[in-house]
Image 1 (tube, one colour):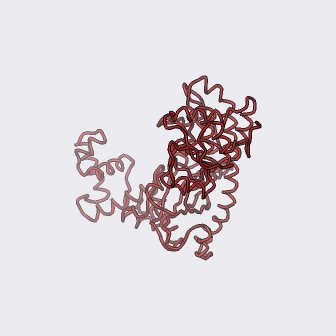
Image 2: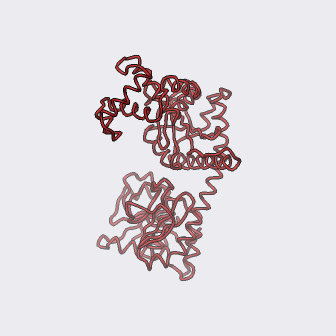
Image 3: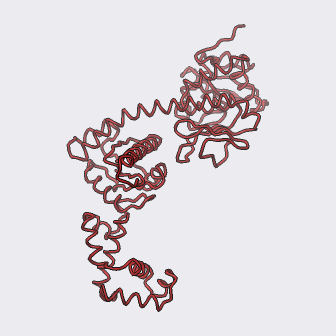
Length: 456
């Protein structure tokens, strides 16, 4: 009998059930693309063969069929209504044996033809079933790992920690796959046999990432133009609806700055531009994975990001983690209205107070920093010069004393004798005034805070 196949070289549910000798309850010609042995949070399980009884049947309308150990009237009615297949397997049959038989039938039907069928199938599958199919075809545990370390998907039993760079080691192989890595785990011999397939699969993932990046760039360019117009007050806020920001949706706006590039020459300017574009790319990757409405724009060497928010602090810190080391981020309070200009001002104030590697919220700013950040850098510099006319050694002594509040603790922090510290404090008071006076303390505190803000 000639084997009945469908798109991607897949076999139909009815034919698979007959080949395995199972009791066919509901016939279906839907192609079986891969086996899903247990529930997974798949968004679109098209072509999946289910080896379990779903709790929420409606989520699996796109599956090819179900295999159960006993009749189930509700599942049978659902299968007939939605056009899924249904077959019964003997309850005494070990599930592991059934899974092996199905995998053998799906991916090793014809020597010399399985690889071509597999690659044709992988080309057309969504990302999550992609890993399931590759796992079942190779017998290897697989994980997709984002550049910032988050596991984007897995199939099989994978370890809790994964490689961060392409390479190979004892029992694992990590390949560059566009947005992150494709990591395979298994015996050395199995990894060797599957290496060619894994390399092709990684290239397919890389091509997909490039395609998604191009599509996202087109969408982001439209959103970026709108965001720029909203910041300038030249765009109608109601247009946000077209990008998923429905009325009442809560959002934050963040300003992100890459690590500084020293120098005034042309090469330094090119590096700054490259750093900003890389910042935008990584921010787009992260927000795209977050799965919420967002807008991105570039202003100078900073990236502006606006997104629908659920957990502001957690999401802002995760975004910063996805960016190059040493970037800093300031984000606005949560807004539920259309005050984009106000949110931009809040984010700018928070960014000025943030240090490299820090994500700082406008809501988390202390009152002193809030007041000082309303001033220009020139005003802050003048404040420091006016109230801190000290040598570097005396300035360091003053900072230690203000931080500790006692001469003994400050002396220990500076590794000097307490008498030495008291002598320095007398010299400081001769220049600034008695540190016991409230107005002198207020001036010193403001000047020290302004200095820290200037240093970033």
